[in-house]
Image 1 (cartoon, rainbow, N blue to C red):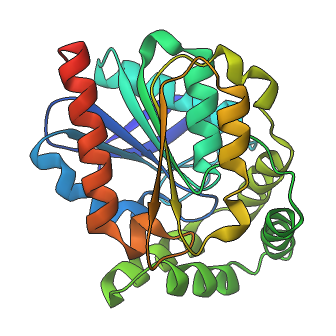
Image 2 (image 1 turned 90 degrees about the vertical axis):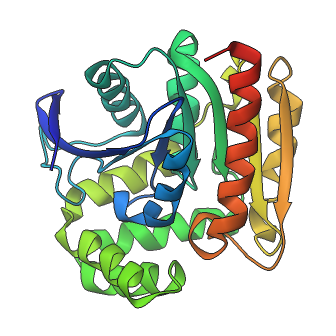
Length: 262
């Protein structure tokens, strides 16, 4: 398994394929195992997965994990791989990491894909989801969190087990730290700075985060953007509707390739 060092942490990553790099960014606790089905995109692109510090096979480093720290770890991974520009594909709170990267290093960003994404947490139901994650991690009930997230994010036994194993291997205080950072993170006021292409993906049944697309359209006024709604699924588009999600990401990356000649 390949590792690299960033901010004092030894971090685990995986790559498949060649071409335009697609960096997939997982939600709190779930780790790189989240994107098992996205490996198929390596037929045409370079698929890159990383366990955030304290998650999966990555160690704790200095013992903190925030949205901005994770974005910097991904920047260092891009350097490690020698890639000039990346497409950042963030799932749920991983979308905040993607936005933070793009806002800090637009010259290294080819495009941003968020699925179930939000520039801040400002609705009651989403806030309660974060509070639940914080509470479970504070209690160090990682087995309970593993059962909840693995069963809600996988169709197959093997994928469910891979996600559960990652969560149980993860360090509860760092999972809590990431949930807390995601809850309080906001980049809404910075969205006017965003100029890279932005693709917003939402599950049709994920109605409690649909509101956030309007924040993106209101504030990310200089970013070319589009919204895609995926039927018959809620928040878990990459894991429960992987074929459709992969096709959407593939089309977005193909346009970026054509426009930039990458």
